[in-house]
Image (cartoon, rainbow, N blue to C red; front, top):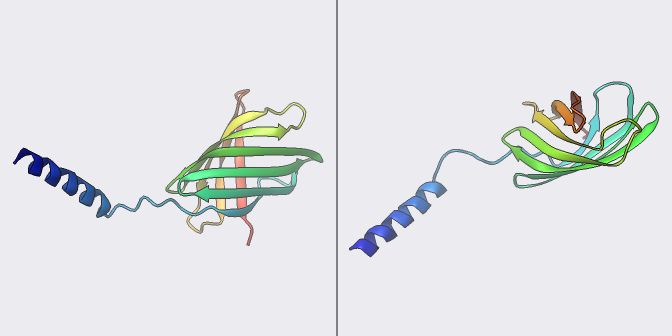
Length: 131
């Protein structure tokens, strides 16, 4: 009897988790994005690869003529994207590590949020989806 009760509880738990009506699928942010933060940013491209809730991004930008390359690894939950960023080609005086926190808008064409770097600086980030 005990084994049947345990088996029933395991089966019930498994079925309950499968039939939950809470949608935990994150928004889709795969694709090519561009910086639209200020006019000081030129030739800026972000490629985001999403696998479930995992995010890998690669970012190239030119800020007032200086070039920078970084990548990030993190996650998406619902419409919130966060990842650790590592700069591999730095702009002199800028940090080389940080974190980005972004939210996808309702139209699913803009990621807006902020960065915080290892030096304690914070600032805005805005990416627009390229069609």
